[in-house]
Image (tube, rainbow over all chains, first blue to last red):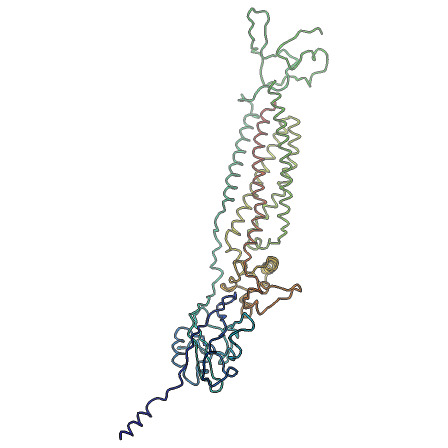
Length: 297
Length: 252
């Protein structure tokens, strides 16, 4: 009876599945590339040196495959719950991974053989582009990630013979994809006034206004007649008539200059240029016109 | 009489200032021709946006520069003749040209602020019109292709402009190319050096800086040529006209 019970216990104990080793590796973005994150693709660093320290594997490095799991939101926990299953590779096909009423939110895609990623890379600049296949429809294709989501990634070591997961890395940090912005949101209104524009506008406007003002004043003063202020002394000699502004009268005892009231300024008297050139009219020196020298004609 | 000597000095000053202003006006004429010719071939960026008054200001400056030259030579003649009617005609013509040149300076500076005050206008134009099949689209595409190849740049502020924003280019080619192939380095045979590397953004195979600094510096260069040099000519002409007005009042 006890033997039967013990046997029953042994039967009821679930046969432990070979546990999946978690290696101390975390997928990361390849920072040196400009297109590392777009709205639906991500470029990751290759899984080098992640699975090379494992022993007791049923496959060799030429037959072990490395797969990638991109997962969004609930997909992380859903995958972790299902990862021990032997049909894990086809449990969530890519076309339906993110669609439907309760999507699985993860999919698996093959990266390559373990021998493709030796620890010391022969050539630098290795990368793996998630989403390279675009909008594809096979079960494990490398299709676009959902736009604007924040996926996390995990590399897996898969046995190519019975398609089970042997080892996995840790989940990466969630990487936020871009959401497409509409260029109409770029405000192209008031971009600010540069200092140069303000200076030029104000100074030129003031200069133009001042010029206009002075022009009007000058025209009013000079062309509309009347007494003019500060027009200075008369240019040109006044000759040919005895309209002299002031002159000395030599008959007085204490001579004082006599201001001639008949003299009118600003009248157009004849000038030296307009008089006929005879000895009589050239007798008076225009430079010293205020003093009259009597000369023999 | 001292006043007569003073008048002669004033006449000489007016004549010399006019000679200098004639030379300055001719230089303005030449500089404005350089701007209007647009050696950097960036006119479509302002033309498509509808604010091309940098070039309109240059055209006005061509005419005012030459008009300054001719009128100042006339001014030398008028000052020498010492006749009020000639000086008055000179003053009025100079004032009219002054007003036009003010308009040119102000409008060039204002439009520059609108276009390249920040990168939004240029970026929006690039996203909307690059690869579009319309007249404006073809002009913008040609201009940007030339700029990207000559200046070795991509996008307005950076290549990420193509990635972050929706654009006509993305609608047409976005599944294959994140940015135009003109962003990629080319061999001397004009083939793309590494198109796969360019698509994923390897910095050694593509240009990673933005084109806006170049566009902004060229349009600013045009604007300062028309605006600031025009402003300096205006200031000189302003003081010269004040002296000419004083001379005018001194004439009999």
